[in-house]
Image (cartoon, rainbow, N blue to C red; front, side, top):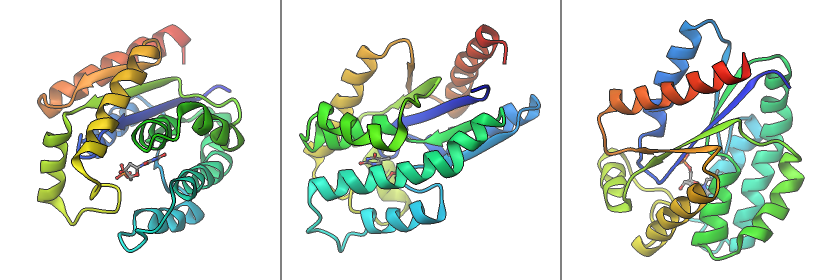
Length: 210
Ligand code: TMP
């Protein structure tokens, strides 16, 4: 596979969309074909699954249903968008990937990392991001930003303790995957965060001669 697979992770309200757009502009300017996509979603089928997942009326959804729906959206996303783009040698920037399921469903919903990874094996096979940027922001700060923007969705409307577990889960995961996951303080200035992401990407491009 000759392309570059970049994922952006973080607690809700950490500013992923802003950074993805800045990174897209930067890499396009360097001549790469860049595909920006997201999970859950990223395909017509995935976007329909997303609506079901985040709908606040679906309060009776079980944890297992939720985990399988994220994986179903991901399976479609991988085969319809991510793998074809990487095969073409393009850059794919995905707003969330398997790490989100490990942290939200595995850790915060207490389903366990092993189960979540097993489920997701069926969706992604051997595919792993080349690099992941974790925008780290304390849950109280992220939620305050979200509340200013719009009505909260089903996940965002979870209790504070859930968001704290998500935050702790990301910290735990990032310590274990130091090579792949680059942690960035998302409370910093937008341009400062962008510079750090660029640094990480440039180092990777140089190392892999992409
Ligand atoms: P977003 O708001 O970042 O687009 O993500 C939608 C919500 O779904 C967000 O609260 C994080 C959550 N999520 C999971 O719980 N598991 C997953 O696998 C993914 C991709 C997202």
